[in-house]
Every structure is written in C-alpha cells, then in structure tokens.
Image (tube, rainbow over all chains, first blue to last red; front, side):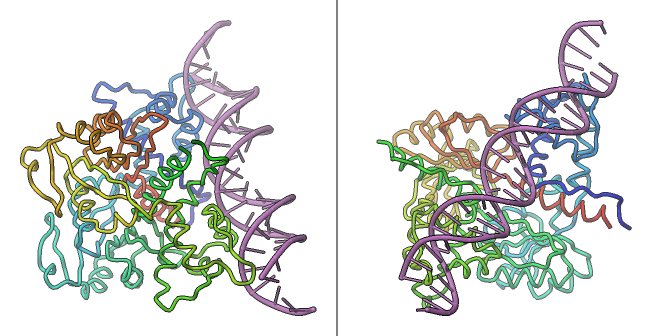
Length: 215
Length: 215
DNA sequence: TAGATTGTTAATCGATTAACAATC
DNA sequence: TAGATTGTTAATCGATTAACAATC
C-alpha cells in the first residue's frame, strides 16, 4: 500500500541526522526536556536554519519559544533512520575490514545486525570472528533467501566485488553497503551505499596536496 | 610562495577521481594509449560532461577526436590527489577499526603511510599489529613533532576523540582522518575528513526505511 | 572534408542561507 | 505584552546538465 506523499530525504540531511542524535544522547541524564535547534547547531557548527529544516524531515514539529521535546526528537530521528530497529545482514569477505565490522558492537544501534560472514578461503571457513561464524560463500545464496536477509555488506577485494554483489542481489538483498574500491552496478530498486575508503582519503590527500602547492 | 591561481577542487570531484583511476588502471596491459571521457563515463555510470569537467581540474588537456593520453591521465590524477607520493601518518586507537587500517596494504597507494599506532591500553602497548608497533599514547606528542607527522588517524571511542584530536593538532598534524562517530573541532587551517560509519549507514538505513514505509 | 571528441558558456537543479511572518 | 524560537517563502550559491563552438 502506498503512502499519500513520501517525501524523499536529501542525502546531506540523512548524513547529518546521526550527529543530532549523538548530541541529544550525550546531553547526559540531566538533559533538559526541551531542546532548541540553536543548541544543536552550536554543538555541530551548523546553521540553525539548516538544523530546523533537517528536523522537519523527521515529521516532528517543534514549538516556538521552547523548541523540540528531547525524547520525542530522539525517537523521531531514530524512526526516520530506521535505528529504532535493525535489519539482519550478511557480510561477505572476512578480511581485515570485514573482521573490524564483525567486531563493531554499535552497528546494531545503527540499524544493522550482522548475523553471519561468508568467505571462499577454506582457512577461514568454519572459524568464528568476534562471535560470528564464517561460512562458505557457496552457502550464501540459499541462506540469504531462506532467512530473508535484506542487507549485504561487501568487504571483498575489488576484483570479485561485482560478482559478490550480483549474488547478493539475486538472493533478495535490498541494500548493499560496499567497502570495495570499485564501482558496482545494481538494479534501480536496490539501494547501494559506498563506504569506500579511497573516496574519503581522496578528499583528505587532495586538499593536503592543494595546500602544499599553494605554499 | 603563493601560486598564481589555486583553483579549489570541489569535494564531489575529489571523490570521483579515484573511480577514474581504478578504471584506467584496470584497463589491462592491452589498454589503449588514448582514452575518451565517454569510456570512463560509461564504466562509472556518469555523465561524460561531468567526467570532462572533473578531469580539467587535474590540469591535463585532452585532444578533440582522440581523448586523453592514458598514461598522462593516470599521472595527472595521482598528482592531483597526492597519490604519486605518501604522507606518513600516526594512528591513534588500536581497536578493531584501527587494526583493520593498520593491515590495509593499499593505504600507501592512497597517499597515506601509517608508521605507528598509539593506544593507552597497557595490554596493547608494546605489541605489533600487522607489522606496526603500538606505542604509548603519552609518547605521541613528542614523536609526531620530531618526525614531522602531518596526518593523524583517529580510531578511538567517541568520548576521547576530541582530546586525541587536540593532541594531534598541537603536535603539528595538518590533516585528521576521523572514524569516531562524533563532531570534532579543529582550527581552520587543519583539514578534517570524516569516515564515520554512522553517516554512511544513515543513508543506507534511512533509504531502506523510506522504501518500507512506502510499501 | 566529415565526424568524433574536447572545452566553454549558459541553463537547470538541488541545497543552503536569508528574510520574515507565525506562535507560544 | 515582549521576546525567543519555529516554520515558510524567497534569494543565493554550488554543482550538474545542456547547448554549442572549437579542433584535430
């Protein structure tokens, strides 16, 4: 069934929402019941108007003079991000980055729960990393479909990332979180989010290089 | 000494440059000497005009009809990103994510070389992770200044990230690569790039949630 | 020459910021 | 009531996309 009017939340807004959540949660037990956007803006070095616009996407209305109800705001942001719940996920590629994610306790509070890892290396298959079993890649398709897994995490080398992605998509995965430094093709209806470190480092080293040239 | 006109490269462009590099490098040994932006655009599902504009920031000119010299283009992109070289870096926080980065061989090809890790946990100090020594956090300031370290990688828990960042900045670090899920304050002249996973996951889970609500 | 491709200038689009009215 | 804050409408800014001239 379709909603009347599903407003698409801009990517920059989605990326800022976790910041608001962090500030609200770390206000401490003595936090006030109401919070103004000016407070959030100051903590995060943002424009108060931008904060207000971002928060409007959560559907929660503030009150002139007093601001937003702190508890309500936390819940509204969590609900918008889907962080009031989590989706089970399969991780493919039990290398360094894969292992780091398997041990990343907070992932569940970010809406994702890794239930198993997959690898094709016989040395890794059957082992347990941070309490999660590493299974044979050949078992992925079957299990993902049977367990209704909707999120796939790709931490394999670039050369095999597309093949792994295709397998995940075939198996019914609806969102891919990619760490391989390569472009992936997915059908339109599949959500693809890249956490590729090379993109992030490119911004850092590129700016560093620009500064050096300028000196 | 100042350059005549240092054009600031937009963030989206910097983020796309590694993609071009990957495609060019993986064209194989039989790659053609010339490459057209239409080829790159097709491989990465981008607009050819956008590719052309991005490449112009590298300062390399293409030739009508034939395109860009492949070798020259690779070098021009690398030079723009500072990937023809690397900066030595200190990593602070030898946890899961820290260990993953210490073992990430390719980092050097992305312009960054981790020379040592720091932690305050006595159990970790003195150990070696992926061939890199873990030193006492108390030694960081002195060493960073003496070794002219310009890049700091923050993989500590959010609660201590600001303190670690302040220490790095005091010690002469010019760029911070942050993995802690918290906002960091740095002086204007210090480059701050966040690789915070919660921001990336927010986009993924937020869109997944929107799709579900829409159904 | 004809045609493919680059580079430039203008138009569009999306997001941020500014101005201001509404409200408690 | 006065003042602080929200929410809305308009203006600005930056990046993308379109149109087209230049060139080999």
